[in-house]
Amino acid sequence: MKGARVCLFDAPRDLAFTHEVPGFDRMLHVFNDSWHGIRAASGYAPGHKLAISEKEGLDAEAIRHVIGLVTAHGIDRVVFQGYSEVAHALAEALHDWFGEAVPLYAVTHVTSTQFENIFEIRMQALLREALAAGTLRRLGSVKPDFAHVVEEYWPGTILNFGPNLGETLGPLRKAPGEVFIPIENSWRKNLYTNMLAALRSDLVTHVHTVNFPSGLETLVDVSKLSLVPFRKGVSLFATMASVEAQMNVALAECQPMTQLEALAVGTPCLTPPLRLGEFDDDPLTALCEVVELDNPRYVRARLERVLTMQRDDPAAMAQMIEAHVQRRHALAAQRYGEFLEF
Amino acid sequence: MAKIDTHTLPVRRIDKTLKNFLSGGFRPAWSLRSLAPQVAEPAPAVIRRSGRMTEPEARLAAILDPAHVGAQTGRGAMEAEAALEVVLASAGAAAVSPHPLFEAEVYLGALPDAARRVAARMGNPVLHFLAHWQEHRVAFSRYFDAGFYLRGRRGAPGLDEVTPLEHYLAQAPEDRVDANPLFHDLWYGRTYGREAPGLLADFLTTGHRRLYLPNPWAAQELSARIPLTPHDLLSYIRVK
Image (tube, rainbow over all chains, first blue to last red; front, side, top):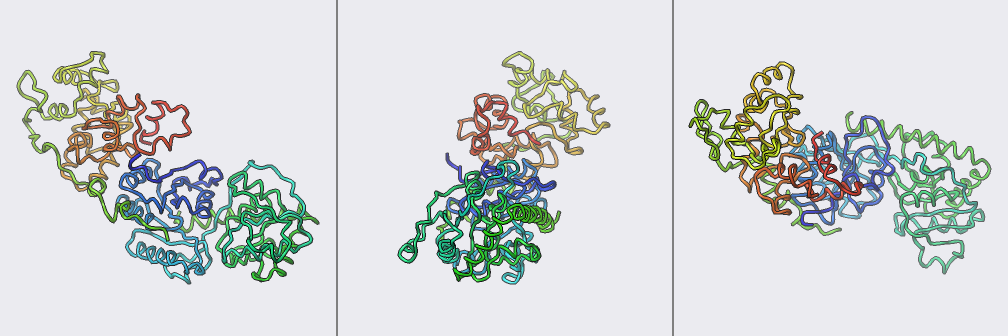
């Protein structure tokens, strides 16, 4: 249908696991439909959702419709989660129409290590331009201390919400010896080091992966490996819930959604140091953050420590994770509230 | 890096529709300033038997939809003058409405008590609406969003002199600005071959019953409504 560009408002998949936080019901998150991590982060956060497409763009009819949606639903704040040329065009149109009545904010989900992709630098420049022009009111980041990268950023760290599962999944028994590595095969994501650590561990009998580490079979025995299809939603959460541990020891991260999704179903997830000062004193941080990122032996040792605790005292593990998740969501709401000037 | 198709970036290559929508430009088909304060020129379609029409009557005639009056009274097709007489003769919350986009019950319910008492003395509430809306600026329809319309027309001449409904109905077809956030006037007209002016009224009286959609994304946003009903469509665009 002519004029029907990607403009998905409150799509069911974006609301399925949304948190409800009083006072946040009139905010709108705008995100790119194909940036899955950011889309998940936006979906779990409280408020309305709008998926747009950087690839397809937005025409006049679509922008007119977004203006209508903001009006019809009484939206009083718009947060651009991630940024693009298309998001910028929309931001300018919204600012022109609503002015200060509907302030616009942007939250980025990028680290400086990703600046090798020139797109990321261009978008930071565009964000600064939008801030200087008054189109955007504030810039926020989920990466701690990002104001040291681009000084115009709000000094606090935006905390991502994990999925709100409620009663969706009951307690699932964890399959002993099974580990899930749901990361892509890229240099930053460090798939091979994660694989080697898991495959070499005697405590691990099964490694589920969504990406096969091509060539690794020439160096090590990969018979423990099984390729699982790309999953999402409840199917993904069930997979995460059924394993003893999950691994996401990447070389650089912000706040990985795979970690939050695993924690939501009571599965510990190894990550690199995330430097979230809010959780410096959290026992889960000490247990799951891995410092030696490119050393499979060290990563294996940390994995085995997690698996041992999981087996020795599963109730303590579950309680530790639950306490962390509750605290995180409370802090996430508080931090968003501060950023958005509620 | 994904290729950006500049043909789909409206702010960079702004098309006439969005530019008009954002700038509030307005070129009326006929000038509202032709309404003289004491003795009005008769509206084109209605000439009173007395040969003279007061200014309120002339303004009422300009928004009169005889078919809508006929539908309310069960008289079917009506001559414009007869419809005008019927409207002027009725009063109160149940008064005959001159146009689908004016709802007496909504208007009276939104007025402060003192204003409501004044309206009661004037007969049909639409007369109070035409004379005093600028003082109170309250809702007069479940579907016409005055705030949305006025924002789209900001800076246009005549906005402070007449009601948003008069302004909307006097728009030139090619310069229409929408009166409802979720109803896309131009798109609706093109898609369903409906003629201006006031296509929102067409949707309210006819279109929704035929399950015509109010915008290109309505089907998607109403996908949970199975089967989709005319009532769903009205609820969807109702101003909250």
